[in-house]
Length: 474
Image 1 (cartoon, helix red, strand yellow):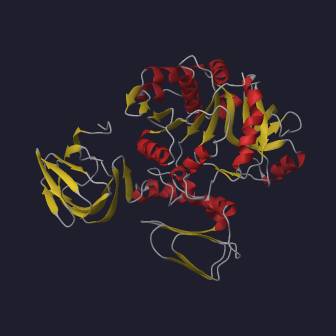
Image 2 (image 1 turned 135 degrees about the horizontal axis):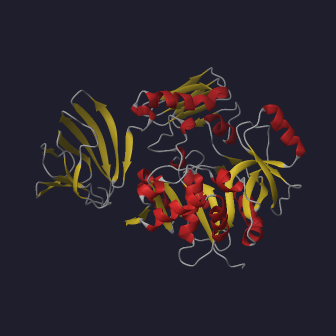
Image 3 (image 1 turned 45 degrees about the vertical axis):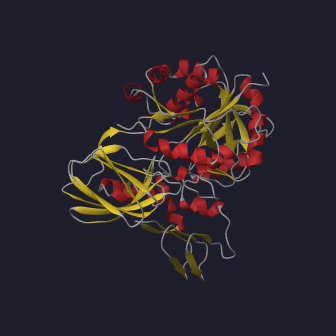
């Protein structure tokens, strides 16, 4: 029993709208370096190193983020055991079910360590000790969750009440889960010593959680079985069947299983945990200067106090301001009082209601071959800066509604146009007529950078007809 493998299951869903304008649907907070040089996703994997019988992680993400996930794992030298692609968000219960079914498909029954990709833990060694402390209970069939020891009467988290006194050395049975309380109730919870915050992190045998799902949410489990049975391989990814997965109820694992099971146990965790749920939370967990400020990027600050000041592109100046969040990105600037940081989600909802692009994506859009930045645009034209990774190629494609001019500013490009190849170096250019089949490749060892000028009646990204693609895109 002691050598049972430990399989990390990293859930990469979520959009982190309260960290707008940095976190957006096209590039959510888990893929940003918010606390250190590595992204939250990368840190989630890195903090596991040293755990006994650790296996390569199983990651579950939105299909739109698959190449971001794969690239970020590659950057830290990790080859996942699998990357499962959800065709749409269905909360955490279907994701956990899919992971458990996939993990047990080879007559294997590992311990699953279910983690969110967007949490911050400041004391990784303490976290690893808690995982080790929960191992025996999980091997015995308990469904272990890690409860965060409260530091304040927080009303933004759900709570877990233990059936007996909490023990940092071993999990104890769960009495009940409690939804987000008011301040007075939270103060009562804090004084009792039996309540922890619900972290959404779990440790259990694959067979144990499957058995409880079979009993409590059989329709969800059956939909997940079908989605896996009808899956399809796509390069290093596994696509779940769209129709079957869409039938899954939209349920959190807490609601589907943990609140109903008699097998739940809670283990208290004090490891500097944060779900990084707002800019205010990020300010609280970051290192502050003598005036209580957190400074990131190109920032000049004078006589400001207790502020979070972050610049991604342009110079940001803070002069004589207090208790503010100021975040600059390529196309939007947020200025908010620190006490109102949780309300940023309201602004995102307004942007989405207006169908404003700033509510969904940045100007920089990532693709498996590199990325492009929108620079400027007019009624029938737009300008982009494109960067192609060494050895990478765009798809062989054509456009019905636009023509393109390409100008190389760094590196070397191979341009395929209607069956003919052209080699371009710096300061050289070419023209792609409307309707021409074309492809752009980088044969060099440094990134290829070029300026693209598009002109035509319609410039949307859906005006692409692909004939051949190295990345399995339609």
